[in-house]
Image 1 (tube, rainbow, N blue to C red):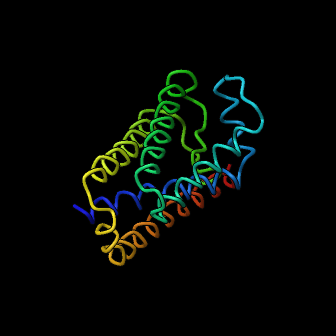
Image 2: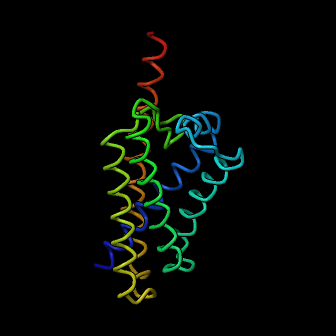
Length: 173
């Protein structure tokens, strides 16, 4: 159970870090996505969202304030799921840019399901963490770091492969 909780926290954290960093690297397209939703949003919101996402991921990995961080991560992932559901209805042809230039997918059922799955993992981590001795949980960290590193590498490799594929499609067109 402890290993599953730490692995879940690290999985969500790695996804948040990757998405936040990718958004910061490609703020132009992320701004375009938010504008495409048709909501009046201040110009400062896109970097703020990306920074919040990146920060939540980093704090999750450090184990600083685990319960408070878990609550914030659940709220953040539920907000992303809400945006995915809203966008699926309002602008289904809009590109998500959830991972900046690394993603070219449109809002749809897949984006909503992925967002809800991420929120469910974050919620499971929060609920399990309420019943765990946090200090004992972090004693399993070395193995968890190894497993999470392999998983993070796999996710990064998949995203890089997709980015290369999208770039090649653009060149062919």
